[in-house]
Length: 438
Image (cartoon, rainbow, N blue to C red; front, side):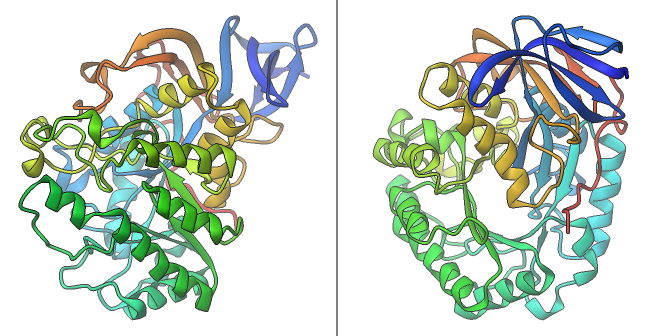
């Protein structure tokens, strides 16, 4: 039997070890992983000697903007950034303009993404001001529901115990995960200086918010996912309540690898929410991710803004950084520098994100799974925002040394990106919307 595509003689991770293998693709699915020399005939063969053949990363926390914020990012530039970064599936957050609170807005985003996409795109929805107004008809087209206690999607919404219970109940009844931004700061509060900003979005407020939703989760049940954990205290709290099937969590590369002390107070480049914390917090997050495995996955929290919004003093800067093109190089550098085992990389960047959202047949290189694949060259280079495909090019990782460069990205067995060039037009590769396996 022949295959459509053979990625020949690449380095594949088998039982946590680098092993020479060839990978066959047929009808957009992985047919098998072969011992070198035992491959079948193929319609097309790509020599991957000296390259790593890995599952495409799955990024379950991105802000692709589009619609009323297309000046910051749209589905074409955002998914091109994903493909160039070795990310084959992205899940778009609902705090867009307009926010995803109705089936009409969701359909607008789906239509736009279908026309512009270069990778797979999934979606979340938000909760209206009156939780009972949640439109359950959108359930098949979303992968979860997101709540923003510190910055609600509808002005005047307050997230207290009853709101947390209402959100948790919606998700329990619809069998969807509830994701939340752990921040209990007062919506609309305006800090007067850097210390005021850090106090407003403190680790105490992060832990307080987590406790609020853990209480609702304990009463209602269902699946709860904590977004971008940034503090040691928060990670410890999650570890104490660890429940693989019902309580999950994520962390970003910038909270793992950067600290607030790395930047001068007037620099808005690294302004994010939650803020960059201390070096001790970063070290504990690493332990929670790889040692304890109480944090399940790594996400970019790709949040693009214009240069004019970022290249200003800290308090005036918009919160958020681009991350789709740095996620894989940064995390693979952790692997190549010996700080992260291969099994943890494959879990936190590939298989666990798919598992958290019940995205079937993705995140693993095995027979029957979608042929979403990134091919990576191990070489030393530096991150340059000017090279990004994203419209957002201001990054706190500017000039940082990395040891990995995604060179080819396949989505559903189709070569989308190859050595700096896009091999397909927009709207042809990938699936929109990505749906959960129910």
